[in-house]
Picture 1: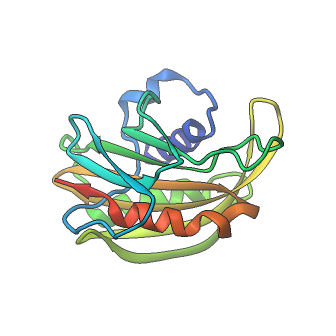
Picture 2: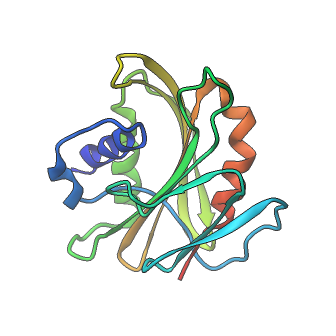
Length: 196
């Protein structure tokens, strides 16, 4: 079931539609808690209402809290007039209290879900922490057809963790050829996340 949810999450990032029944099911996406945000010039801090989550983001990026399944999405501005994809970061938090799942089972299921994606190429899968919580960081490339049947080669950095019977997934999504331009912003935003 988590593999379906991970795939659903990625479709949501791309603005693609799937059946609404998956909305009530587990959704993956990592977060963290406890440490102070890095000092980053030109960043704003956003507190997600009712979720006890904060994130700092570049001041020229745009907040969206209306996307089903995510608690927040933050979009970079388009690079130029020919750009059709906004690099982004999103956070999904899911209550897992009704499920008996360990951290390792959650990480393994999430990893397998990503591996099932079209043209999946793993770049790295490593242990990390997210604001003091044990986490996994998965970096990979996959191909996605858009609603206009254009195939985008996207690169993802996904951080997954469990805290107090909730799963958190933070996913940064980039066009593969724009990764170097945005990876520092992604890392700064991930490092700034607080979950109380």
